[in-house]
Length: 314
Image 1 (tube, one colour):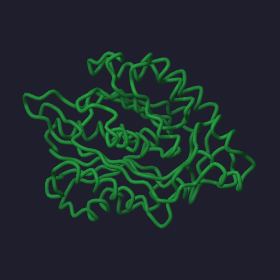
Image 2: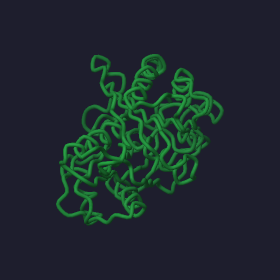
Image 3: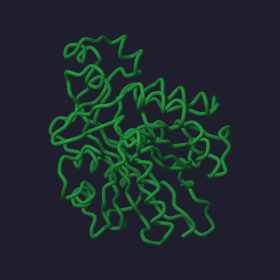
Image 4: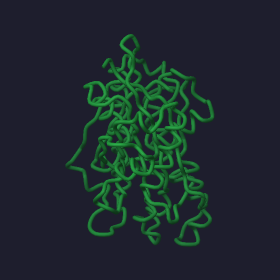
């Protein structure tokens, strides 16, 4: 196989919208403080929906947009760090819900960089001939792991899912998913934690902020270089939606004034592994990025881990 490409996208968010004013009824904060600190105005919070329910809803939409059927899919990969159940994995549950017969199916957990990790793993599988049509999903239910009395974290997180159908490119077609730049800083893994049995999310916010705003822009530039794309050619930049100030800091260092900068965090909050596909799906749905245009994806977070690649917009 010569490579792979994103064929279509889809996303799902719960119907319940939680405003900053509602958060202010739980902890000592206010709308202005939250907007200034992290850039969030609203977030979606799931009710009875599980991670698998949201993942399947996003995947079903992506599949419907692809022109393929469940019978065409031979690989399902889900990026998540908030699945309560150890087994069966979320990918198998999604396959069952969508009627996908006998796919390879597994979950990836690198927290907020999970979708970029999963997308590259699928790209590698297709390049190796181990799969031809895959569904890659980022899905999180962070509300189940949020301490709603902790002002430093409860203002940040939301629930949702985003999905992409990935397919092999033709022999004479350029790859639509560029080489990945990925890695980790394991000695700083304690900066973002979901530890123990039925835990809460905990993080060292300032440490993560300093790392993200100083170390990541050169790695994102490296992803462009490996794809043979100059940053000035980018139509859009879709980073993990961690914090508006982090997004702005990385974008400024990349020097990409011509690119659309995804800011889904404003209306969705931080949805961890779901944030990149959720934001990208919305950009495509609103037709803000032309088909075939280069888009830089870059995930980062718990681990500490990071991964990024340039993709061609479906």
